[in-house]
Image (cartoon, rainbow, N blue to C red; front, top):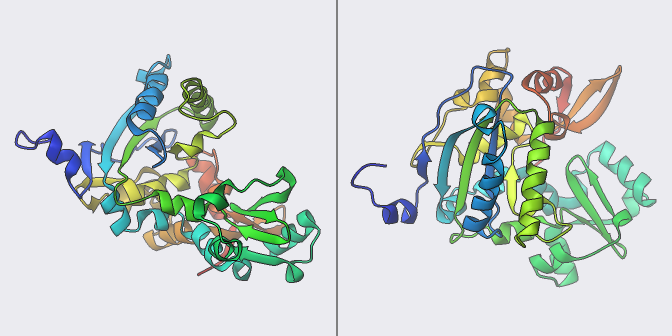
Length: 319
């Protein structure tokens, strides 16, 4: 921030305001870059300060967890750049087209779980469900069904309500909550903690938020706080929320895991392709399986995520 930039100007700008400039990519493959940002429905300042108190009170915090970037992203900027839509691109496609874009494995798992032949089932995307049920996005999101009537396949959630199967019921409400008036505070932590260790840390954050009445009992932390859960999600988060200054995004090669992939023989087109089209066929035990690169690399190191890439044999190009 320059001497002539007031705090008011900083937070009323229609462009991202970088509070802690990005330090640049890590050259240590044993580290992870973890994005953390607040959901629009959270009580922003209070949730942020409560979470940071838990994080900074961790005994090894100063040695193993470093803030390497912080910014305020205005809601107007997020809306005009369709950042949320890009982040949830695949879930949005399924919420729009429903049954039409199911892969062979998804069809098989659907019938096995619900006991209904896929071709005979009335499966619709969430937006069609809004019309058929005459519900608002929030009413659809809050629609309760028994646990056995919910199935998640390749990160796509199917909820049975009577004879209707609704794909990604949460997407309309999620888009509805992200408005031009909703700014998002984004932080990037560089850490040598494993994902298992981070999971324990964020569990403490969840318990503290629930104790303070900022998160309802039984609700996951993801209702109010997002954090990267895999090396590939690090790239996805960076594409929407990492800026060198104002609206200038940090180049792909300056994102830590992307740089790691580039140095191991991948090119920029291949990396962006995996982020945009994460549903893949991969080899496991001599046979082809279907998966989602975000799920397959969940909680993994850079080396483990690279091994996922090396087993991929095909991608599903869904639109």
